[in-house]
Length: 220
Image 1 (cartoon, rainbow, N blue to C red):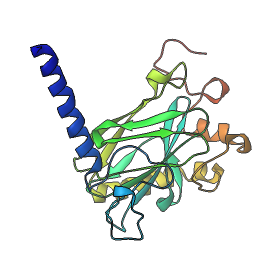
Image 2 (tube, rainbow, N blue to C red):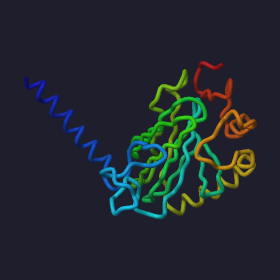
Image 3 (cartoon, one colour):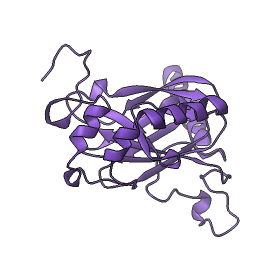
Image 4 (cartoon, rainbow, N blue to C red):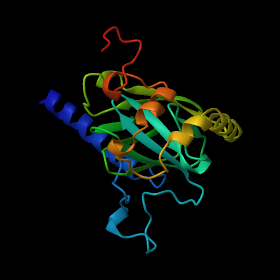
């Protein structure tokens, strides 16, 4: 009985803690489709507090899943796409999460964000980073043979360092940005004839367009 009661108390306390963390006004957690949900089901036209941040200064970051790597597009900075994820400290971020092939799941667990990446769907999630330094991004949805290698390291920077980073990346990737389709919330990979060139320019090469981590001993 002691074992059962103790285990139940631990599980229930963690459930309560997790629920509270997901609904705090700062806004973080699971993707809620193209329109994020609102507390008590009340639409944003009223005075209700939504799960979206209370700010007009929101950084837009598009997260694009593909077998087996993440890329990130920054529409407010010329629309460049990169394999690096950088965020400014203490600024609300809106992730627009989608996929080019199968279902993935964008899981930046130290940011409190987990959102499915579905082809043809934009899945919105919010967060506000408050600690400088690295954080891990993983795929939390079994998506193929190299699912376990689909991870990345993001970084939270100061505002000045973030702006310097966006300028450097934008200039470095200018030739790749010209190959990209116009920014949209979802993409149809069958209509992007030059997708292979874009992936090659970003260093994402592999059989059938899939990315095989060069560190893996098994290669196609």
